[in-house]
Length: 390
Image (cartoon, rainbow, N blue to C red; front, side, top):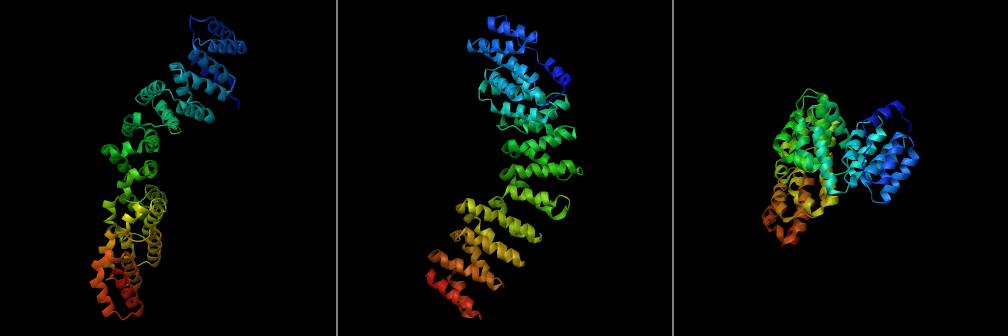
C-alpha cells in the first residue's frame, strides 16, 4: 500500500513528535527520530517502554515512524496502545487520520478508536469528537461523521450533538447525519423534535435527503414504528422510492399493538403486496417469538377479510405458524363467523373449537350455523367445534 511521500511528509508535519525532558532512553529515541535514524529510534523507544518510561509518548512516536513508512497496521497498533495509556496526541492523530485520502487508513482509524477500552480515554475521545462536530469546519464535520459510520461502539454519549446536525444548512452533513443516527436510534426516536425533522425530510423534494431519511428510519428498526403509516404511503404513491420504503417497513417490523388494532381499516385500500409485507413480518415474528406473535392474532385474523386470494392464503399460513389463537381472539373469531367466505368461516370455527371451553361465548352463533347452513362441511365442523367447547 504505497502513498506519495510528499503527502505523508505533509501529514507527519501535522503530527509533532512528543518530546520529554525525562528519561535517557526516550530522549535518545527522540534524537534518533529527528535525525532520521528510525530503526535506532524504535529500538530506544522500546527500551523506554520496557522501563515504563513515557510509555504513551513512546508508543505514539513509534506509530508515527511506522506510518511514515506505510506500515499502517503497525502504526495504528501503536496509536491504540498510546490511547489506552491516555495520550491526547495519539487521539488527535487518529481522529485526523479519519480524514486521510486512503480509505483503508480511514477504516483503520475508525476501528482503532472503537477498540479503546480505557474509560478515561473514551471520554476524552468523545470530547474531541464533539469539538469537531461543533466546529465551523464543514469538511472536518463530514469526515468525522464518515469515520463514525464505521464505529463499532456506543455513540449515545454524543447523540445530542449528532441530532443537532440535522439543522445544518449543508446537505452532505444532513445526509451523513441521517446515515449515522441509527447508531443512536433509541435516543433519536424518543426525541420528538429530532424524529419530526427526520419525518419532515420524507416530504421534501430533495431526493437525496428523502432516500437517506427512508434508509435512516429502516435502520432504526423497532424504534421507528411511528413512521410505518407514512412509509406505507410512500410505498403506495412514490414509484421512485417504493422498494426502499418496502424494505424500511420490513426492517422496522410489526406495528405497535395500539396501531395494529387499526390496521385493517388502514390497509383496506392499500395494494395487496403491502398487506402481504405486513403478514411476512408477523410470520417472521412467530418464528422468533411465538408468545408475542400470538398477541397479534386478533389483528392477523382481520386479514382474512380482504378479498385477494393471495392475502387470504398468506394469512392462513401465518396463523398456522403462530399456532392456536389466544383466548382474547375469541370476539374476533366470532365476528368472522358472519363472513360470506366459507374458507374464512371454516378457519374461525376450527380456531374456536381448538380453544375448547374458553370459547363458550361462541356456542350460540355456532348453534345457529348448524341449524341454518346448507353447507354440509361447515355444518360438520361447527358440530365438531361445539363438542370440543362443551
